[in-house]
Length: 226
Image (cartoon, rainbow, N blue to C red; front, side, top):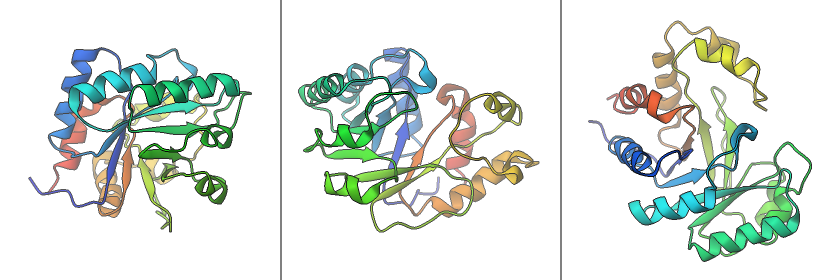
């Protein structure tokens, strides 16, 4: 297998069942040597396992850096501060700070109270203000073309899609970013994904699988491509 050449790789992971999660992450790392795992905070407004609890358990089990997302969506500053204390108490390697889509507090307010983590991650918006508050890394929205360069450590977000039917299911969701029509109309999504990967593999990037278990065979084929 060809060795993946890159600076740093992060992945997004939604936990579901502890033992299965360990197996999934172990299988993925067998062909994609990621450096950290980020667990989102109630993605798509769905009730999910606490990112801090799951990050702590998986970090201890796998001896890998885990980052718990703290979203300001629907939260007060007091709640966010409690979550930050929880992440410190759990000795997590970092947190990701996002504002979210519902009324609450901003990522800036979370960052003001979150210094001292090895990974302190947020989006690329209001970058100078976030840098002044101790931000260590940014993650872009998912990109499929026109990959910009940054003077600040920034992960290019890669959300590969392997089935044309997936685009229909995404139409009703509030993505917050555009998927190019040329990608949607691709006759060979695996090849299109490999072309994207070939442009980012020497850069810091962040993998966002839509369903890691279901996509595992396709991801293995993609990242094992010589």
